Length: 113
Image 1: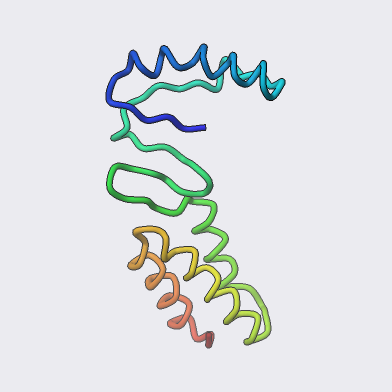
Image 2 (image 1 turned 45 degrees about the vertical axis):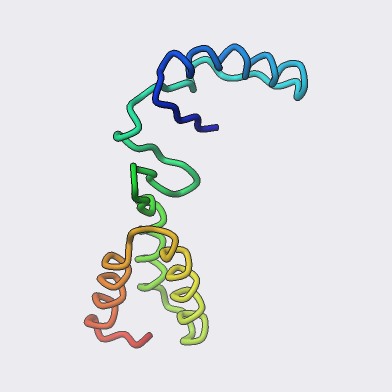
């Protein structure tokens, strides 16, 4: 769960309310060590993306998996499917140059896409 607000006090006041809701309605507990208050300009990792003010980048894991899929020994049809899948995912991020760099490096190494 990610909460963003300009006023730190509002966030601090909402923690007990969230705890109470989770306990009463969902029978869940909020882990005390997994609460982190930090400035929004630091960004945060959320669902495979680094979310920063006004931009989002893919996480290192996703980039690494894309690079590995480009190096894999797949049939040409499977290779194209993987490429399209990752490019579709990257279209949600500010990562056009990164995706083109990975594809270009793959083509330079003499492998066809």
